[in-house]
Image (cartoon, rainbow, N blue to C red):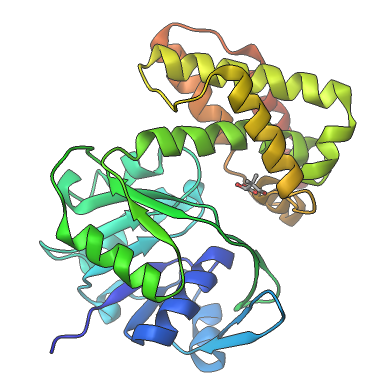
Length: 313
Ligand code: PAF
């Protein structure tokens, strides 16, 4: 029987989390990395996932910088940072055949549109995962939090896609609770608005997610940023099934639940690299322009985060 082939693009913390757990069940997993020497080290050392309770999972997927060596896959899971998407789209030509399903589990809004330039709408799915992982060393990640992974087609619709259902089953077998929905966009928006209200504030202040709750000035900025994003979403005709107050309460609950987390954007800033601001608050700014709304708080947050990337980059 033909073995299902799965490639994961990006050996970051989530890439390691998904690759190790899927490899444990299916073995036929390959990782595409863009750093040659790191890829060689990972191919010989393998990957390690430290689960809660400190158990370790080791995995030895193929790791290559050369998409042609990996070849055509059944599934390609994109887990690079949103700002790296442009740099990896070309590799999809070698990884994808007519039946390959590409799934992006990236943060923010916009990465899927970049992938859609290379992959037909019917072969593209987007998702949101509540799993959190932190990178320890190269090739090692710590599984920081669990939750649901929700998947849906790039073009929402009632048609069921057996490949997406099969992918959800693969994730389930690998221990990721998963659900396929007809319209992924409300879930993407809800996650986006959480990130809008947490990530730039932590990146600017250096605070952990939970510490935002201790400062009334930061809570005021958070409320305004989330409100602007919520209004853009309403203007675009999207609905997340929550009113503004419920959304704000949810954002604050996430601050509490992930209180000790160093947000992904603060991690990027501390590394001195670029951040996903352009796909989070920057996406709100772009969509607001289209909708004829002004979002000054989100614009200011973008400038401040970009400033920090510039001075520390
Ligand atoms: O980007 C992140 O860090 C996460 O999405 C979240 C929910 C803010 C938790 O740290």
